[in-house]
Length: 161
Image 1 (cartoon, one colour):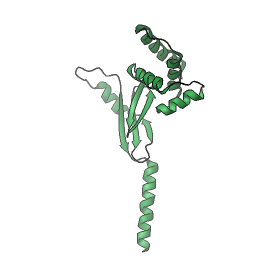
Image 2 (cartoon, rainbow, N blue to C red):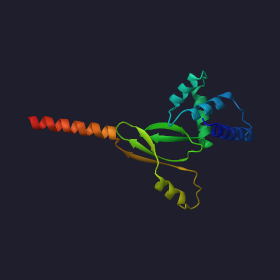
Image 3 (cartoon, rainbow, N blue to C red):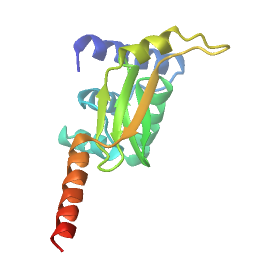
Image 4 (cartoon, rainbow, N blue to C red):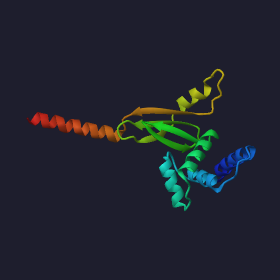
């Protein structure tokens, strides 16, 4: 995690906990560090494994409650990709687009400056924009290649008969 991002997300969490008179538990900070050490999207199981790899064990309830808190603080974003819930560190990366393969489920973040500019310039009534995520569903080149290969093989078998 970049030091300036690490310091800022810790400050956001500190301020929230102090304002609400909540305890600053080591579990919350360990989970925050783990979230910001993972590159890209992650499941709660992957987050738990990352914590265990760092010799830090937390209960499932603590993990769920802490992630819910991080979502509320906009430190984490939850994505529902084709029935799979994944999470992502959100601070300082709030606008992005995803390509999602409907066959293999591969998720790729892409840059679409025109889309970003249009959304940033959009005037919304009685609504404050914090960020956006765009999901584009389709078939990745690997899966498309496999499909084409199967079609060609099937066509070749038919022609031999």
